[in-house]
Length: 424
Image (cartoon, rainbow, N blue to C red):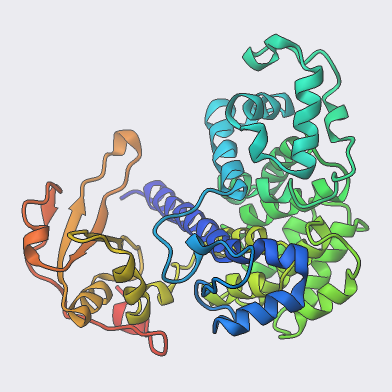
């Protein structure tokens, strides 16, 4: 591979991990989102403790006698990624970039919402902005015409410093590796449709941090991202508070106290939690998203943002999803005759022995599958491990090639995992 191909492949893997991290973090916080926002931190902490989920280091347990808990996102109940507005906006950002690239405008964002996003899937500032669009925009606006009014009117709403724009910003950072100013500009164009002031600054910071983390160490990335927002803004102060508390186990409580009385879905308190959780656990994905969720406020939004930022920084996600305990969860969700597919492509780690170890420990069959790359479509070659109850279920697979010899198994558990044994 050429140097350019190596860099492109490394970035594509980072972006894949960012997607995985964002979706995992969102699903982690989703069961308790309503509980946290409506009943507060004490109710959240009591529930998490009652289901053996505090501190949060795995998907959250379920109790059927507590109202508002989304069962389908709980440990032992998960069968898919449940729909969520946090992920909807990430997909829309991707579609906008595919259609318009760096020339994307706020008007393009507005058209995308009206053409692709159901009004019922919007909330607070986004719902208010959508309402103005429906009332004021010309009929031909959705087809590329002029809006017929000043789009800045859409952000004139009482929610315009809440968290909505911040949850829409991640993808702009992922695709602007090493270019935080461009990421910030794209996020700003998106955010200003519905938000103002710190509502915009929070989004800009998150996008710029994602862009900077892709090619800078975390400390430098933080400084580069802060350069993109006013130093005296509430958002910048929230970032500095979260960073100053990094590594402090009481950081979540300090942030909640600092912003006491603020809406649980405001930009500032949640932004401080995001920075605190991420920079407290730069080497531990589960702890980073776990503390982001366990600290309360907007649990699914913060879990998603931390998960995406953690993934883009470059390390693989995460060891605890390849443990004996995780395998028990996967088996519980596996349909009769089903097959589990583990994507183990990695530049630095050979994860095949780990999956082989999980299969052997469970008494399951396992095969290695190789997917051919296609430079013309920018698709990289890939390595997968397929796991099923019997070898018969794996026979006749139509993959391009199937390995005949499995590596010596390595078993990871929640209490033990060693990267030394799987370094390439």
